[in-house]
Image (cartoon, rainbow, N blue to C red):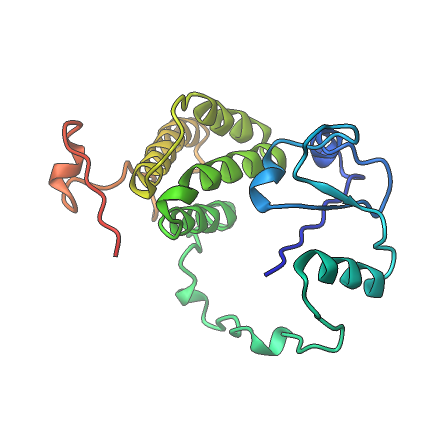
Length: 223
């Protein structure tokens, strides 16, 4: 599987990311293992696992270059998965899990947390540190709220030991989520824009997991 990501360096939000990868022109294509895209790239960097693709001006040339790297024979006429293969979006707004009772509540941030928690449980133990770094780097570079970015990145920076277990990474993410909720509860109460139907809480509530509140016990069951 080949994963591709497009970054628009004209956006101010992406300036630091583009500087980290020494982007000087468009299109500029880099190839390498996903885990190596977390630290940046320099043109004269020795022993880098990232490779600058200098022959990708057309789709034919780029695919030919990729085929050489993978020793494969993909063709532009291979089966394409278009939108017809995607599940249709729901027409019933009541089924939207993250819809708030007010227009400026929940929505994107709720869905983003759901995605992060889902991902944290879908990685293998040996992938937990990479997933942690990927989430931290993504939020630091792309989340539009600057105060939120700095707060989350501060929590990431406080982690001293690499994660080696999926369980530990998943628990850390919940602790981070609770710290975010604690901060937002105070701000929303002061400004009066909290969602009355979905008040922020510290998870999990004691009635759902009475033993989870004990710091001497940490359990994580993955199904």
